[in-house]
Length: 340
Ligand code: GZL
Image 1 (cartoon, rainbow, N blue to C red):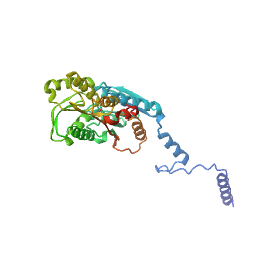
Image 2 (tube, rainbow, N blue to C red; image 1 turned 135 degrees about the horizontal axis):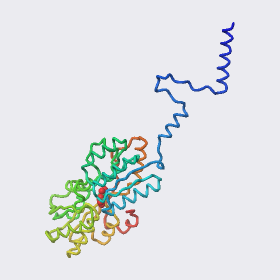
Image 3 (cartoon, rainbow, N blue to C red; image 1 turned 30 degrees about the vertical axis):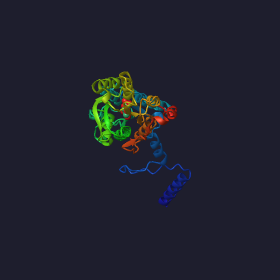
Image 4 (tube, helix red, strand yellow; image 1 turned 180 degrees about the horizontal axis):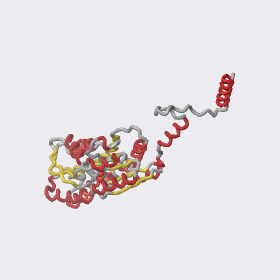
């Protein structure tokens, strides 16, 4: 009798507990590590793991301020961070790799979520990129590639420089259909854009176009002028064309050609790359014949990538920029629309 009474009381207690909803979730056996947490807790932990732009901290190790292109790239990175509410730690390496490496180490020490870097040259990055990997901080290559194992960076956001070189070669062929002799102003020695624009151009330029000389102007206007002065001193009016790896060097060379007494854009046909505002003005002035676009406004795409990476989402290994080619015939109409 007594036993059945106890059983009856136990049944009533369980039924009462179930009715007032206070039954605790079934405790998982200690050994079962995959036990489902209550829905509410699971949702809470997922939400806590997901970052938003406002709690994203990014380090950007900018390479320098050597060109109009770089100035526009820096503006895009900084302005977009402000618009999105991202905490940006920014450094300018004055085109020195050791300064970029120092900046990356500083970002690692500060424990940023993601590091963005446009490597000034292709080589010499494996050690510091591995330090970032060991610290669990993903690297996004922006603008320029680095010659490192693919597992050391999560994605590359930037142009196809080889294709830009191919486009430049095709444009030079159109400007010198019967062939001719040209000189080349190369970008920063060892940089991905210089290496790739050099090789891409040679894939498409016609064999009746002879490259008399090829020297680096380090992507700057001043150096571009200086090297063009030396070319003119050595080859004079033998030069019929110039291939410049960026508009800043082309604009410096235009100054040198005018000071020498020849007409840039007429006596010497000029093909350049970037499509900065200064290039459009030169095409309006008739001193530049064509510019191949290379887009520096990478801020929005960069932070979209950075947030996805910080939240552990899959991203493409390469996100190529969409780019065009611009000519004098509509330069006046297009110039007001250009953002850089
Ligand atoms: C290309 C970029 C180059 C530009 C130059 O993506 O790295 O560096 O073409 C700039 O103007 O200095």
